Image 1: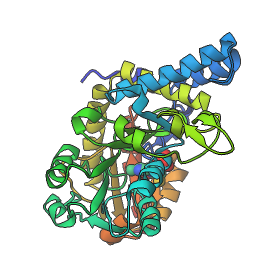
Image 2: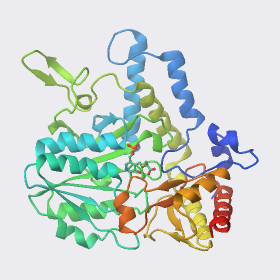
Image 3: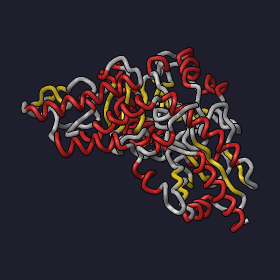
Length: 410
Ligand SMILES: Cc1ncc(COP(=O)(O)O)c(CN[C@@H](CS)C(=O)O)c1O
């Protein structure tokens, strides 16, 4: 493939800053958060330097321009995931906030005593604890789709877990942030819809939005959540996509400015979605940064990024498998651009500490997915993850570093 990796990598200042160090910085933690291209940094810098104002709260031209920029970003995000309308795009603080918005707004209104919520065994804590909290308040029951040793969900178990009229919400990740398993979203949606079309389905796209084309109409999910900082955009901004008629049925979660229609001391009526869920002054610069990130991904090409990352993934898998005492978690049919593994010789934190001495940044720990660690019988893992800018020499540096760990601890 003629992916312009050198040109792309040069756009990321943090990477370019260290590429000529004595031990060039190998950044292998894009699953946690991605680096930012100049194009995104410049868009936010330009806003703060030349156009800064609030939005939707004035008639002067600068605030009108800023409002246009803000709503233009919403349109870009809607197009990016092929939503029917930009009004189906709610800006939040990130995936965690998006899932909690869904759980507390939709859940508090529609869940009742004895109802059931189904999640998967591969979930991040954001897609576990939020549902536990609302289930506790509404006296609902939480059920879990099991995962096989290869890291794929056991889809045959789904019909056993779903009860028509009782199961109200099914929530699962498109790509796991630990094993990397890519779940067959359309197949799962079809199984669930076939049992009860009234069940609402949320897809956690934190690890898929940055790496693969998402078409929410094709997936037919009711909600979809992702974070700007994992897709080359800033922190502090995320998205909850929701089918409009469902968002319209949901009460606001926070009260304040912008989310209202009429306020009296006796009664307040609320704005239509998405404003209903965006109380207060929003993270304007971050929304503009997210819009720039979508532009950058579109210009670079999400399919080209996806294909390139798979090439890097397969290179990494082939190299890591040669390391004595290294065990990659799972072997799913399809895997996102990350690998979790253990070393017989050292605890993941010890290994990651030694790797850091060599200028290699990996994640070690439970990755906010403790149930996955328990299911696979490990206290923690080392996780290497890749982005649009990852180069094969970074994998080679990782292999060298892990062989050093083996020499020291082995
Ligand atoms: C599948 C999945 N779902 C939700 C989240 C939460 O995203 P926030 O932007 O923190 O709200 C994450 C973030 N996972 C990071 C931080 S623990 C990781 O290193 O794996 C995720 O991977």
